[in-house]
Length: 335
Image 1 (cartoon, helix red, strand yellow):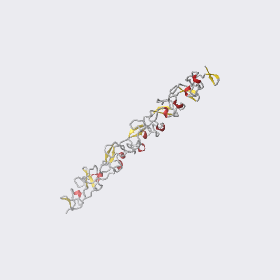
Image 2 (cartoon, rainbow, N blue to C red):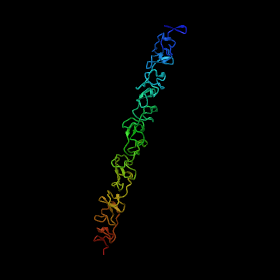
Image 3 (cartoon, rainbow, N blue to C red):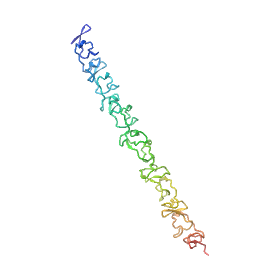
Image 4 (cartoon, helix red, strand yellow):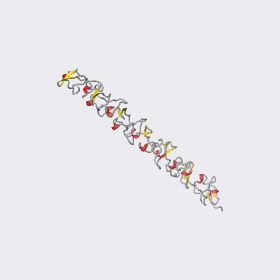
């Protein structure tokens, strides 16, 4: 219970070591001191508290203290553990206490990081630009863009690396970019800031919502029935019943058809000089009347504005002629 210290008997320390600690004056370890291995015992060095590295106690500011369950000595839970006496390792579990990311996992690209004092699983994917990995200090988790449908997201970059990618963030979920379309209320309308950089489809049968999904005004395609892209008619009008009557706001910028081109209504053909004759634009008769059997009898809706023929012009009936006389299919004044 006693030993001789500098010429005077002295009670042996209750516990400690002779490695510069409580038992350092214990010549040849006369007292047989052992490590304290209890909380709050006086200490000078770690060995006063436990037998060696990877023990259960260490010396913290003169008092023995239980080793942290896990963490690191890089400013984290084991920062007071001189020379890593406790043999701390990264926690690598959810909800463990932490101070720095390294308390939770061994290094970048690990499975856990420190979020507001608690270890948390790294997001499976995302970015540190305000997205799923925004709490990931210094991008410790090594997050990458999700690049898959259905992954959670906060903004477009969580889903793909940048403009012209294959995925974007739509209402909190990664979604494949539309193959084509526009952000003018069409297929790419949900594509914030045109992240997908959609282009007009410019081909038949592609899904569409508005004309601009298919082409630019005056182009070769329009959105038919707000469902699928179709080729613009080569010519015609937007009047009801005409070749272009499904072309909203004259998006295709249709022009009147020339003689010999297909038509559905007189308005499809050159105004005043042609009319739609049984599905094909044809030249208006030079003169005649619209009475049955006359030159202009097929001139529907007065498209040709026919007038009576002068003497010497062709006729089919007397009504075609100014003179009221058609002899041998030629207008002539009666003698």
